[in-house]
Structure formats: structure tokens, C-alpha cells
Image (spheres, rainbow, N blue to C red):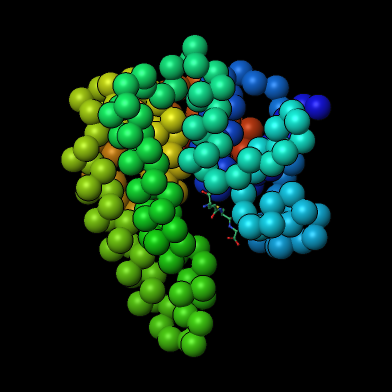
Length: 214
Ligand SMILES: N[C@@H](CCC(=O)N[C@@H](CS)C(=O)NCC(=O)O)C(=O)O
């Protein structure tokens, strides 16, 4: 069977969508409408009981979940594309950046903006949670900014770490949050990649592309 990619436009799954395009793979898209709660429905929970996207259902019918695991598998299953370095330290650097993006920038920072109520089980001030989220995001981008390679990418060449960083810089630009200079450069470098522009168009962000280009 063809691989099935469960995704929501403009979410963290955009990073995996870009990788699938970079690798020129054949797959079916299954749209998951998060605002409508598709991810909490029985059909989706049968595929991923964790109730989250991205999910890649492989040719053998098994589901692969978690951003880092999917990105790692795609890179290692297609070694000629060179999407992870060969040396152990380079590989660890890729995992280090992806884990920080997903675990901290996304799940601690942006989650406070997107799902504020989850951080207020007993009520409280939503604006204070959002402010905390914005502060976490700004601090984390400063940390990442200092670590980016002079190439403009996370490492000396494009890797799976770059699509992880891209989905959070995309969110920041979309929300009007400031990016430090090297992160901003990384964002623009990514937009220049044909696969990135193609996926943003496919996910309905053509106007965003025009706006940032102009
Ligand atoms: N740890 C997961 C997190 C993915 C995640 O949080 N995805 C969000 C969309 S960006 C989601 O599915 N949210 C639904 C929910 O948690 O209710 C991963 O790395 O794939």
C-alpha cells in the first residue's frame, strides 16, 4: 500500500510534509481537522492512540508517530539524500536541535499560545500564560540563533533539523513574533527551497509566501 500521511495544514506536520516533498516520495494525504477535534475521534485514535499528528502510516500498514522519529526514519531510509550527517556527533546535533524545537519551543512555548486553556486547569489569567509562552519562545530562539551554522542551516548542509526549525519560525512569522537575525535568515533560506515553497502553496499559504517575499 501507498504510505498515508496524516496532517493538518500549517501545523508541526508541515515539517514532515516538506521532507516527503524533498525526498520526492509517493504518499496519500489524510487531512486531520484539529479545530473540529478529528484527532480525538475513534477513527483517528485507532491509527494513533496518542491523538496527535504527524502520523505516517508505512507501506506495511504500521503507523509511525512523533516528529523526530518520522524525520529520522525518512532520512535513514533514504540515505542518498544526505538528510542526516554520517558522523555520530553530527547526528547527535540533529537530534539535539529537533528535541529542543519539539519539546521546548513547540510544546512549552507555542502550546501556551495555541492551547492556553491546557495550562489553566483551575482557571486563571490566559494572558499571563500567553506572555509566558512568548517569553519562552523568545529565549529559545536566542539559544538556537547562537548555534546556527555559518551556512545558514542548522549544520553545514540542509538536514532534517532544518524542517523542525522551519515549522516554528513559520509560526513565529505568521503570528508576528520577532525572530533573531540568524533565525530570520534561516527562515528565508528555507523559503528559497522549491520543496518548501511547494508545500506552503499546497497547504494554502500562497498569500503568506507573497507577503514575506514582498
Ligand atoms: N510529540 C508529538 C507532538 C505533536 C503535536 O503536538 N501535534 C499537534 C499539532 S502541531 C497535535 O496533534 N495536537 C493535538 C493535541 O495535542 O490535542 C510529535 O512530536 O509528533
